[in-house]
Image (tube, rainbow, N blue to C red; front, top):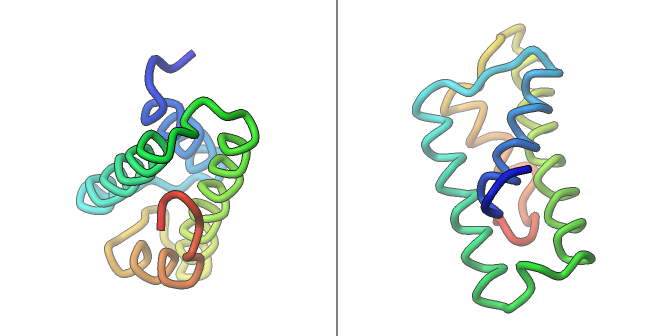
Amino acid sequence: MPDTLEERFWELARKRLANGNVALQERSEVRFRNLLRSGVAKMQGGGVAEDPVQLELADTNLLRLVEGMIREAQERELVSVSRSIYDFAIGRNCPAWPFC
């Protein structure tokens, strides 16, 4: 079990990306991890980081973002998420509380 909320979100995303046979390029991973940190900060700042309903909503929205990246990479017949794919998927799938 992950020790922090950020680790929990990262594990969820990492597993889904692996299941989709898609990886994050290094720059995209840095940006994605920053997005996760921002989401965690919003949840902690709002006092809902341990609320099961809000955690489920965050998980659902995170998976929606990840699915968007996977779908776009696969449509372009690529095996990794570049910066342009990341930007496109985030733009298409936000807002997705608490991440964007």
